Image 1 (spheres, rainbow, N blue to C red):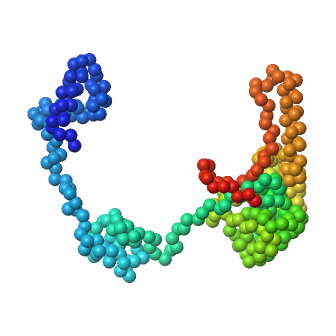
Image 2 (image 1 turned 180 degrees about the vertical axis):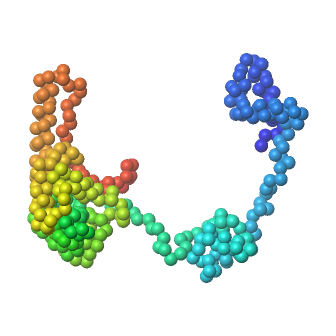
Image 3 (image 1 turned 30 degrees about the vertical axis):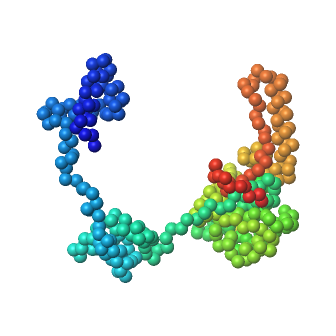
Length: 356
């Protein structure tokens, strides 16, 4: 609040500055005062009201006389802890008390008092929301280190009935290393698929990371015991967070949007298995994946991608040397992708990578 003397000095400084050829806005900027404030003071002075701040006469709250007493705060706490109100928030308690002709304070006052007593918490029988930590990040530098798997539905000709497609993908190479189609989803079928896939891929040492969501087939007793027997490290997504399992989600999108995907439901489980078999062969050996340098997952899985990318690089450089005027810059960078992250740490995080 500016005193009357300071206001007079400011008006005099503005007048002197304007007399020297400066603009009022420039003088106000130097004084740290808004031009509208100067205009208001001038108008107040012209009306003969002087420069005294009228707000000094206001009957606003002075000091801390509006604070609740200790007895009033304790009364609010006692009411909130009564059996009738212990499961209700202040937004429910205050209106109920008002209907009974009782006023102890506003909802914000109730919350403030409860916060001071450390009693602001979830009230009621509904389970309070819990914070779920981000899954650990795993870094794959070669095939057979980190796998991702999930189950998706395949429509059948029977309305409301679906086949279940189990798919296991190698995160490093993007190759589909295991798949099966079944009429239902169980932990036993999932465990059998993982067992077969490990045998086919030659997994002979502990340490393979297997990532999935939190479905019952993924966390069933049979599945967990099989993983423990094989020395597999389990990794699970957060509930309802699809971004924690992006590789399987992306694979299912590719599967269901590929041009060859049937426009009509599958008539039999044999037909579904035959189509998936054809898709897996196309995906692994013909589809050039954008995230791994446009080589096929099978080529990367067999470590053929380095030679292929190197040959492409030589070809482009030779083409540029032959017709340099057709190139405005460097040739396309056909680079090998050395590592792939599953749930990478946030940018700027100091967390150390966890090698698979």
